[in-house]
Length: 336
Image 1 (cartoon, helix red, strand yellow):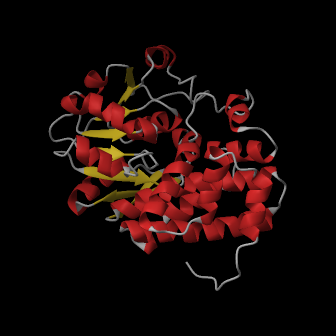
Image 2 (tube, rainbow, N blue to C red):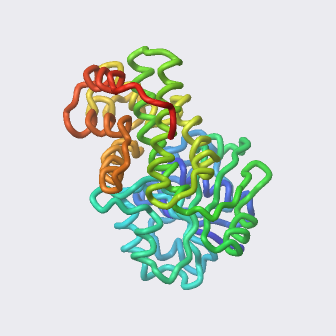
């Protein structure tokens, strides 16, 4: 594998393009907005989504998705979760026939309850799929700080080839065969990060956040098992690792959004607040709360924390009564 395309020029897509450039793959970075592609090409920075990071000269930028993917050996998909279907449907006819799809999008589709891999299998059935997930703030990846991630692929040989192609001395890739569990971890942690942000914004303390993370991890494991994932996957980088990072640092958009809610802002006020930087970048936990809660209901999985976030964000529930209801749940034995 010598060439790659990265579909999605947000902060995470740009950071992954940097990583692929360091790995020698000469990536083409596709941006939905022509102005973003033009600015990247002219200034060698992504001022819209990842400011003050000088981009590798090997990265090319375009708003032509067919041109970005032409003759590439691998395609990395990094659009927001709720846009995956639309962009992949648009691009499917232009996919290089032998190129695997590496999905680096974390989430569950609202309405259908489908994982990203299930959407890709539906729209691009001839292409093998891998999932990239784990604790990875975009800016740290883009600037070459040490990062470890999970690459999940049902085809072990392909997974090994992909890992060898994209790994660098600062970007360590661990292989997994659990495509489902890896995705569940990435989707649920977004919702739990919003919850932890609310706890922080309400000033409830570190004890409360630790408890929420721990019981949230139990919810993550229950959903993963019900969907067919493995519990050990959720205890690894794509589960516990990503959860720990996202729930303990306001570099996370989901955490930052939750803090604003806890401090009394409405959802719309938080998204529009100029100091929070949420207006353009996707806060995946918002749609994620709805899709995770819906999938849990379909599978008969008890997820009170994720349901509480969904109620706050989508059903006009007030934070204080929701928190009181969580704390008033019957006492029981601690178990997943």
